[in-house]
Length: 70
Image 1: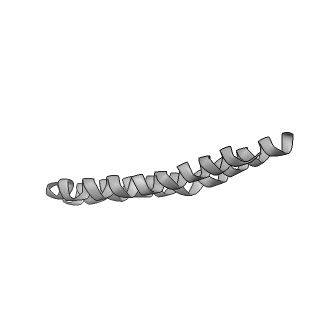
Image 2: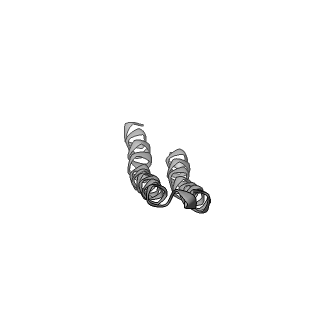
Image 3: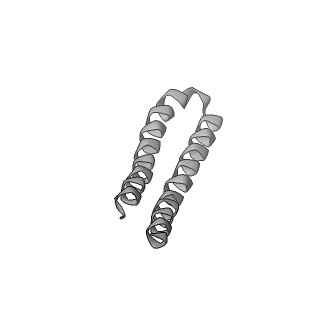
């Protein structure tokens, strides 16, 4: 029982590190682009949201895997 709990914690912990870094970098680069060219904020915003959603989906996959461990 304890090993399964540890496996679940590791699965979600390790599986969320990459998406967390990716979302931070996406936001950072988007804010940098908007800071350099404020008129382009509309063109930067939608791709930023789409990329963040894809990165968040990876974390959700890790959560599903963590729930499937018995």
